[in-house]
Image 1 (cartoon, rainbow, N blue to C red):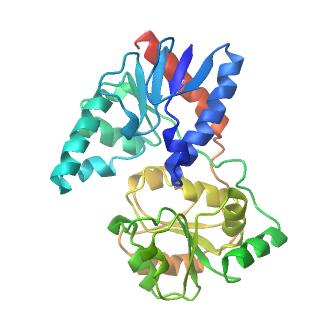
Image 2 (tube, helix red, strand yellow):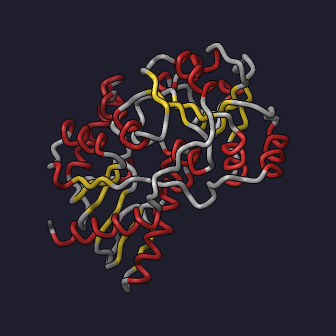
Length: 310
């Protein structure tokens, strides 16, 4: 089998980039074991047996071979009518997704939403969880101190990790910044100017490497997830892998991934979220045992099903 994998999202600083990088690495290992090949491209070429778009933007309207598409969440589909352009673009993506031989979603919650919003048989949607990369493990005190010093992070802090390039009300960052806090807040991720202008005892590090991110996870008092509209919540799994407690807004996907591993608060109660984070204690529960090798093996089985027409 020769699989064409759209690796364009691998450069994305968000979780979708981590998904593409980690999965592609695992798929290449699977391919080596099965006398198969994974090539990179934005559309299949002659000799390719299957095409995998690991993001909805890469789904093709007219795939020449069986196509697998990963749908990470349905937020854009739910809000596609917010503008004419967004609605038209969302409609084309929806049509492309519906033409896939198989879909992959990170949680049952997303899979159920996809089945409800699109003309896709639920039996053709496979749930394959994401995982913490190998870099995310508890780091020694010296690494934590070095990362803190490099980015101006105080000794004790609450942590948020995500994309800050553009304001997004669903992330509730302004509410998080202005919530009553005893500990400083540290925001990690690629950031636009608006994020650097936030006030109120907030440190914005910008995009950082995995080793430093693992160190900041390790040193944090708790990780905060104020948005309930998550498709998986990968930063939470990464934080747990580093031994850090997680406090999250209660949403279907986060509950599915983090049940028994995080403290949940009502969606929208950002003050309650911060209060629960202050009360968090170690040791944090272990993350799910699932690995990227497991995800790659499960994804390869989806390829085989798509080729067989199952």
